Amino acid sequence: EDGAGELDYVPLPLEAGANPCFATLTPEAAAGMVWLGGGSTPPRDAILVAEEEERRRRDESQALVWKLCVGVGVPGLLLLACGVALLFYSFRLQSRRKQLLWRHSRLPLRFSHTAPGGKYHLFLSHTWLSGQDQVHLIKRRLSTLAPGMDIFLDVDNLQEFGSLADEVAASDVVLLFLSRGYFASKA
Image (tube, rainbow, N blue to C red; front, side, top):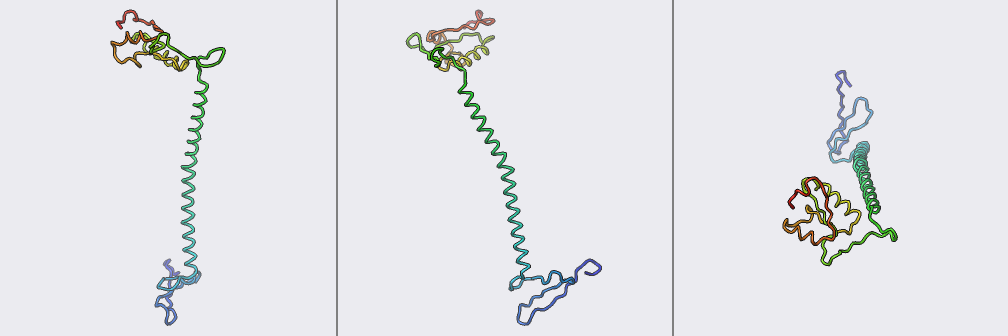
């Protein structure tokens, strides 16, 4: 190395009859010859460098695969496990759902219509201004406690407003939800 920080190279011609390429030696002579190509086979150091580069690329790709597995796979497995746990929990809750049962047999109630051609077991009557939300809650709770009970609620079942009297006649029981303005309402 000269004082300017540049390396000096010494060109050496090859033996007679060989490829006309030049090999260079560094002034320190630490590395030996540097292969410049030209149809001959590379020296052993160049092969080792290529193998080391290939090994480094393979290690980097394996590290990337590992990072992807850990970064995507582990949270994905945790999410799947949480989903399975929630599904199991919801099935357990459904099996413990409260229902009306007969005291002697512990079987759920079965409902039949009192009159032939009955359409509903229960007709819920209310006024829209002050009782609609409460009656809707009553229907939901009764549907949970007695799943076999057919319950009429106008917002769920009424097809035509003129057929309301027919629906009352087709019901076994009428439940009046007496709230403010019930008797003053027209329907």
